[in-house]
Length: 49
Ligand SMILES: [Zn+2]
Image 1 (cartoon, rainbow, N blue to C red):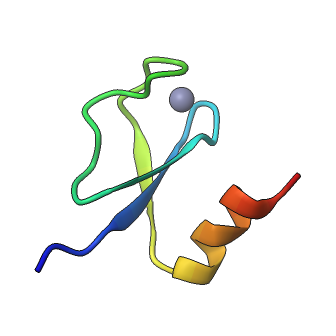
Image 2 (image 1 turned 135 degrees about the horizontal axis):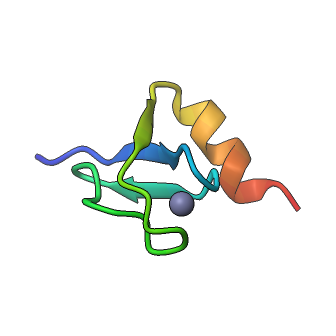
């Protein structure tokens, strides 16, 4: 069973949820990502207004 991971773009802080790290950011085209270890921390990105 594949588990979603969360990646934060270091360029624009866009967060992606995927099974593996995206090759590049769709927003700023950076290839640099930080893995977000905490699911609660990741959800904060999606829920903030
Ligand atoms: Zn970006």
